[in-house]
Length: 251
Image (cartoon, rainbow, N blue to C red; front, side, top):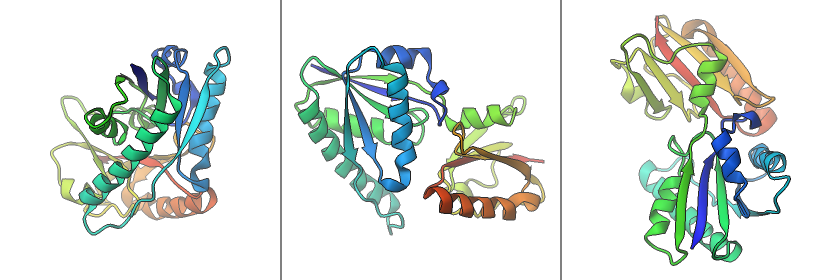
């Protein structure tokens, strides 16, 4: 039996690792790291830094898995994502079969928490029913960018007795208007805030949360939208990628 750990590592700060995650890492023989290309080297580098910090007293191996290319503007989004997951599944299966021996423990280090807008668990669910790898799976929760953003802005995500809605930029227009006073938005590539009333909505925004590149802004949407769009363009130009999260609140 091969043991596999899916470990949430937080949203950028190595100190986001929980004690449970640190203890889990102490069991690991092989760390699998997804290579997303030169533009996102920072993501792989953080994972390596975490390993160097917490696995100093244990020999381990790292295995890089090349992330398959993905169509970012497909005609059918869900079908495209499922096809991309299938390509990832094959790469994961190959890498695990080649690098992880029976009786050893491997780990995938997941940005944020494995349960929130991450494909790793879905891929392993499919992998479990289609492979002879005989994997024992364990999930270690992590701090999400949502939690980290709220902490950095010193805010509560919910108003008293009210709900919080978490969605993506792609789905934001379909989620508004909403009964929730606070809407948390992730994975918003376009950042147009379509459907948002700029005069009656506050935004608490953050990018690269927890890293040395962290940027935070807040204000009424009407007052800060153009600035935020300019910041995002410049940040993407400098770093080659951007990962941001924001909270929309009714005024």
